[in-house]
Structures are given as C-alpha cells and as structure tokens.
Amino acid sequence: MRAHLITGAGSGIGAVVARRLLERGDQVTILARDAGRAKEITAGLPGATALVGDLAQPGRLSWAFSKQPLPERIDSLIHVAGVVDLGPVADLPANLWERQLAVNLVGPAELTRLLLPVLRVSRARVIFVNSGAGLHAHAGWSAYAASKHGLRALADSLRAEESEHGVRVTSIYPGRTATPMQERVHQQEGREYEPERFITAESVASTILTALDLPDDAALTDLTIRPAG
Image (cartoon, rainbow, N blue to C red; front, top):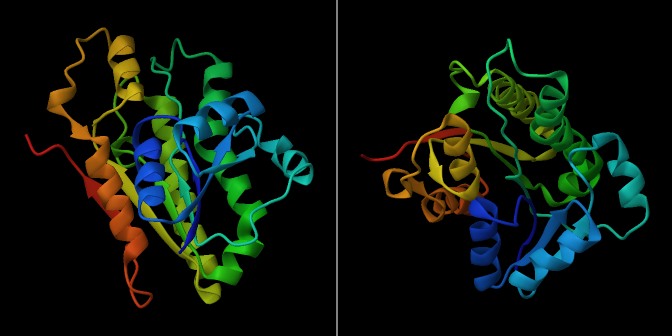
C-alpha cells in the first residue's frame, strides 16, 4: 500500500485520481485550503485524510504545516490544483496575475520544497498536471499560460536536482478536459460548453496512474494528452 498527497482533489481530475487510489487500497491525503473545505472533500472521499494549507498564500504554507502533523510517508505528490482567469494583457489586472501565479506555480513550488525531506526518503514520484497552455500560449491566456510555462520549468529543474535522491518527476499536459474548470473557461470565453467534445477526467486520471505505477527503473518525464476527435 502506497501513500499519496493530492492537491485539487475537490473536483475534476484530482477527485477522480483520489477516488481511484482509495478504491485500490492506497492511502490518500488531500490538501485543502481551509478546515471547512477539508471536511467537505473528505466526506466525499471516505478513507482520505486532509492537510490544510492554502496554495493561494504560498508564504503561509510553512506556518500552516507547523500547526498539524504531516504524513510520515509520501510515495507520490500529485499537483492537480489550479485556477484560470482569462483576458488580454491590456485588461488583466495584477491581482489576477498574482492569484494564478500563486496557485499554479509558487504554491506547488513551496509545497514541494516543504515536503522534499519526506519525498527523498521514499524516493517518491512527483506529478505535475500541467496544461496544453504550458506548451503554447494563445491570445487571452497570458497569465494562465505564464504560470503553466513556469510549472514546466519547475518540473524540469526539480527532475535534474532530485534525481540523485531517486525522486522522479513527471509533467502531464492534458488538452481540454471535461471538468468544472473547463466549464468556467467556456463561460469566460462566451462559448457553449459541450463536454462530450473533450477528454474525460477519468482518461487523464488513467494517465496519472500509469505514471505512478511504472516500475522503479523507469519514469515518464513529459506526456501530452489530446482529445481524440
């Protein structure tokens, strides 16, 4: 039985990954932004435990973790949480840049830093669920794409730095996936949301589990997933 810590387990891809890991008997700890959200998420994931820390406030994660016990073992750290606010550079205010960079990039970097001593001991796998926007930026996507391009750089640097400790790092780049976040993106774009056109969260979760379950002599580094249609 392996132990996993997952961000973004409240809905979408993260919720599916957490459920599937629990169903096969693994231990799952979810990261929630506050105690109320932790209670809400774990109620929907029987058997999961919660760690409270807000990725939107990376500088307070260390303080938050000092007030609660951390998992003694983590075999995988799975970064799924993210936020998106679209808009042209001319119109996007600084607070929306700061929020996306905090949740999508600085928060994952700080969370990983704080957990590295445990991750090294277990020679863990670190999975960054990135985005197609982490490879290509389009009009209206500047802040989100910048955060995801940064996440790619974080993963690449972490992989090079931590290979000597046996920590394996994977970046996964899903195309448009049928999740509540995608529905919100369509609202911002002013387009009708047709979830059947996109990848399912289950399919992306299967890819994440594939990366987690590789034998110890192999690691996926970068994997892109696109809708088949």
